[in-house]
Length: 135
Image (cartoon, rainbow, N blue to C red; front, top):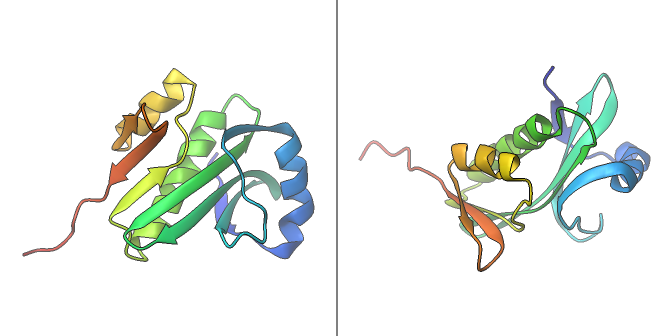
């Protein structure tokens, strides 16, 4: 079952606080007042994931992903990342940087399938966005 993904609302604050305590983490979540945009994923009305993203010129930054500890956490995390990529590219991002190198090799392989490339030295992953110009 897929997530319902939408913008963070102030009414999500309690659920997000609870998610921080029990979630599988990739990266470090920013404070809610740090200026990052937050997308949340809901399943059956319950907050089960969140992703922090920041557009910085032509680069979209994914600073953190949190998802419930469950059998489907990898799928939920990829779904949040895909939605965040759409959000950032619709605002002009030509590349997407995930500010953490996931330790889970199966999850990292899923990101490679999504056209992310690992930079082990910088401990990040980057996805270049293909141009859709018909030039």
